[in-house]
Image 1 (cartoon, rainbow, N blue to C red):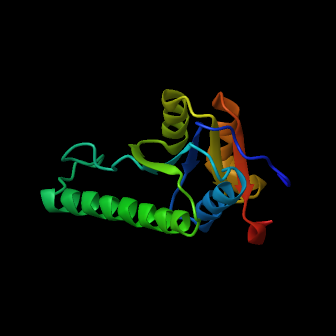
Image 2 (cartoon, rainbow, N blue to C red):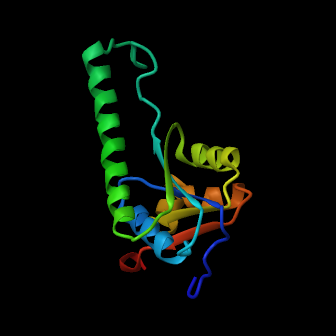
Length: 165
């Protein structure tokens, strides 16, 4: 999107962030490219925690998980959220900007949570990084960005990391 124009005032831009370099690059690109100096827009950082693999005190084979294991897994998930949001805010702080920032943490299947959140917020734009999966990996794993591009009602910008082209 060479020469992209800044978005309109008072818009909501959702940037899906995760642990990857690609999502932080997409956030940086978004801040450099889409926000005007005098914007009154809101940047929404969206992180999706995967569903907990423990749905009850018993796993599929009937083994009981101790509450310590469950607590440890939940603590690790919360630390990951904190780490990703800290990295995203460091990227944001590198820009001399007065953009309003909002943090949202969802839980579930990333593609569903992203699409539902964008719709619920009535976002004007969704920005996502591309992991640059090849055909076979994308066929096996699916692509969250492809899914979102097909299912959300607002424009979707998928930003490729230059080192991954």
